[in-house]
Each structure stands twice: as structure tokens, then as C-alpha cells.
Image (cartoon, rainbow, N blue to C red; front, side):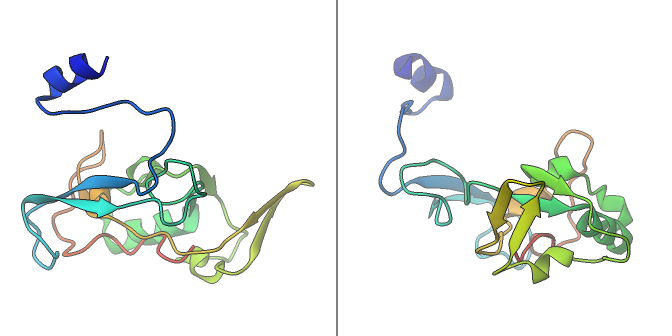
Length: 154
């Protein structure tokens, strides 16, 4: 399988059953003013918020609120901000009156879902430039000089 994938992708690749000790990813940097790099690919460390031995981009769980999506839509309506742009595990609708980037106040707190689920909000969710690229019906967002200020605090 590794040989077939390597041949089709034009580079050496391998499938792994367990995460490497120091996982990394290739990050594409589009030609957007203000980014650290432009129109290039770099190797970046990953999974700093994930449990050891697991393989996640950043963390094991990613939360997003409808209040954040509503705020982004208000600030930049032509960006078409949909949950799929951010690929969350959970989309949460906060209580009435909670607006804007409500998740920013959740770091260090515990989110309770039902009788048994407790989620400790430990770290902010860093945003990469991928959230600005076209995804399905969500258009590219060229107006941002950096990733949208979405769920940057949980």
C-alpha cells in the first residue's frame, strides 16, 4: 500500500498504526500579505495539545460556537462562515444573549454536557491559514491578512 500511495502522490509516504513521537505536518502558506511565509510549504510540529501517542492536528477535541460563526458573518458576510470551514467536533449554540467570541472566556473552565460528560477547556485553538481557503461552498477569504479571529481562545 505504501508503494502505491508513494507512486500516486509522487513522493515517499507511509501509513502508520501509531503516531510518531514527534508528529509533524506540511503547512501550505498561500500568497497572503502578513503571513510568515508566502506561497510555500513548511514542515511544522503538530499535536501539541493532543494526548501522547495520538495523532491530531492540534487537540483531541475542537469546539466551535454558533455565536462565533454569527460574529464572523457580521464582520465579513462575503466569507460565508460555515462550521465546515473550521472542522469542529462539536458545534455549540450558547444561551440567549451570549454573543461574539463567547469561547474566549472558556479557557480554564469545564464544559458540562448532560449528566456525565465533562470537558476541561485547557488551551486556545490556534487557527491556521487553511480556514481562509475555499472549502466546498465556502469561498476563499482573500481579505484576511491572517487567519480569521474565530475560535482562538479555547
